[in-house]
Image (cartoon, rainbow, N blue to C red; front, side):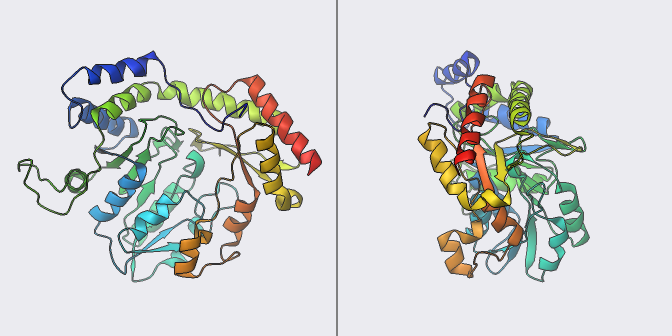
Length: 371
């Protein structure tokens, strides 16, 4: 590939932070894990942070801590990475999908209440591509129906809605730290909450069910090994200290893309809403209707030119095992299903240069011309 889809931003600062841990005796369950949790919680504006080994683990433990289980229902979005659906299925609950908003691609708050039943135990909105738009309205609906909100902000570290940080809206929230995210720990996730009981339960469950006062071989409940090592935590701390730098770099990349593609009538270029401060996760354009049938051809043509692109996201409801289990078909969620056929995720990372972006856009325009 000439230009890759994503790249982490690692400097000597991060290398030194990790090396210092490797020179210490505390590789796991040490001071860096606690420091990372405290600094992340403070940054997000919540009381507690609980680090885990992935965003998926974070969402799963949120489910478990809220007591969601067999025959329960959780309302969520069909336009997302699959983990926000499978975390529901992992506790034997049923994901119930509400279609998305055409503009911001998040779950449409106006379509949530019609999905609420006696079996509904929570709402799980996703800040898709880093956009927290509508999260406040989802929380209002949840409060009206006395339902907890599991806020999937795995793609939204650093974003804000009306001055309120992503990760602080829900009863519980989650960040993720895969290398394509705004900040990375290599692999990792974080649970965020103001509820001490939920935080303490998640701490126990991530650590093989151990309790506060028990010994290493005392297990109070069914637990898991979802811990984040101090090596990963040290990397996370160093990255978090650079978060404002990262947000600015990514905003500059977005600005260059918008400048070059903004007047191309063949594509829809994403923009932040007025009340949102975006910490961009990815940059995903949409093709106008007449080019949608050619989307996959355009993807393949760009890949052949050495430009790494992707189809963020296929519909969760049409993933084979989910469609088979629940009987979903194309068109069941008209907005999401159409959007999914139109998207192209362009290369996006902190240190992408203006010349590289110009090459991406030049290649895209050529592929559109030939479509």
